[in-house]
Structures are given as structure tokens and as C-alpha cells.
Length: 329
Image 1 (spheres, rainbow, N blue to C red):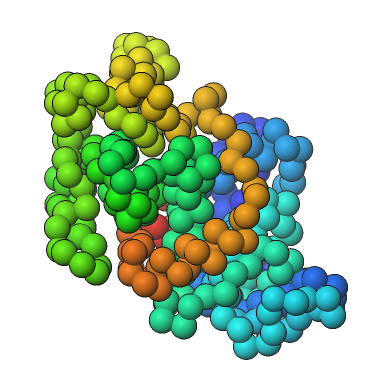
Image 2: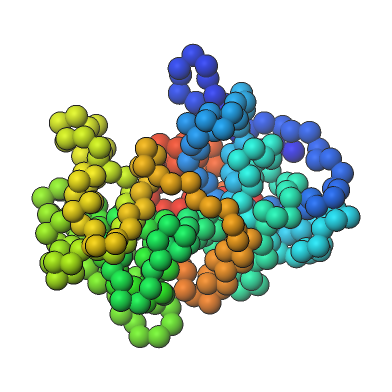
């Protein structure tokens, strides 16, 4: 049984992705569930995080967000039974590649997939949905009347965060970095109710000439933004940053945008808070419910066949994919 793995090179060379033949899965026991994978979303591998938590292997499994059908259950499984449709996220220390035809996973990492939700949508939304919930519920609290700034709102995560913030009654401001992103956000409307744009104001950061601080203060009447979800920040001046970071806001700009008592949730690894794990199972189920009811609509690329998974994962690892990449098995 083949799976996609990330081969880490010790000589400083660029890591490569390879398909490897793996042994057959062990007998399903205890709280473990055997799942036939129907779709697997691709996300960038954070090798620094893996190093910090002492996960060091020559071959790391690729593909953690999966959707599929339960084939077998262990004798202690209580949430699932054969033929159930499920979605979940494999743990960081998993030995399984989500791009295998069949995987063995603990039941606590899975949730039921609503029947009306496709395999691709389920796998492509579960991770970004959990991240959005962590940002807008645990690390801040989006409620009616609050203003939320979502940086890079046309990204897969930004799209879900915008929809969750608007669903909770917040006013949403977003930045974009291309004409395609602007057109996408302008077309993004609620699937139910009044068809009006989800984003109250789109700030074009394409060429770096727009004043983010001035635009946000103007939109909020000078009070500042209640919640900021960034897509990375500059820690230093522009001349000391690499080109790819020069369009990002400076950390002092973010601070100046915040209202009194505001919250800043960052993707900058030197500032990021560790998300809590409590109620994780409930959140997975709720993400699927919102996907099923139309609150969430993921920003997905066209279905990708398994034989193109290696090329797609290389794009994801280099941050070159603007849409969520999902492999159809």
C-alpha cells in the first residue's frame, strides 16, 4: 500500500516528496478505526514545529486532513460503526500518510461527515475551520457589533475566517494582494439570507501603496479594529526583510490598528499562542454542520488525482498554492 512521504535530507539539500510502499495495517483494536480514504487535503509541513516536539524521522507522512468511510472499528470504539462517513485530522505523530487508500486512526481524531457535504469539501475545510474557531472563539470572541480584520482574506484560511466572523454578526474588513483575490471576495456572499458581500471593506495591498492603518481607522470611525487575524507580520524594517515579506504589515502597524481591549491573533511563529485542545471533537462536528448548512464554503482548487499529489505537495510546501489542494482518491 503506497503513501506520500516527505524525505528530509541531512545535508541541507531541499527536502523531497516520494511515494513509498508501506506494510499492511495491523489488526483494528481498542479505540482505533480503519478508514478508507476518499479525499485528503494538503497542508504545508512545519518542520520547525516537528523538530521542537522531537519528531525526527527520515520519512514524514504527508496529508493529515482526510475524509472517508469506516471499514472496521476496534472493540472499544463508541462513536462510529462500519460504513459511517467521517472526516478528521491525523495527529502530528501519526505514522500514516493520509494519501494511503486505507488508514488506521484513533476515533477521537474523527467526526461524522454530513451526507450532503462532499468528500473534497470535508477534507478541504476541517483544518481551516478549526483554525478559524480557535482564532475567533478561544483566542478572541467575535460577536455582533465587533469589527474583524482578516489579512489575506482570499486564502483558504482567510475565506473560512471571514465567513465565521460574518456568521457571528461581526463587521469584516479584509486585505487582498491581487486582482483575482479582490474579485473572489467581491463575489463571496452568504449562501442563505440577503445576498450582500461578506466583506464590508476590501483593502488592496497589491503594490504596498495603500495605508492599512488609515483605511481601518477610517472604516471604524477612528476607534480601531476589535479583532485582527494576520497572515504574518514584518518584525523589522522593509530593507531588512526578504521580498516575500515586504507586503506584510509591520508589527507596530498592527498594534496601532487595535481598539481598546482588542485582540490580535497572529501567524507569526515568534508571537503565536498555542491553541487549546479542549472541545476539539465538538468543534470538528460543528465545522461540518456549518459546511453542511452553507455557512462555510471552502476555497478549493479542482480535484487533484493521486498521481499529481507529489507536484501539488511541492507547491503547498513552497506556499505557491492560493487555493486549498485536495487529493481525490
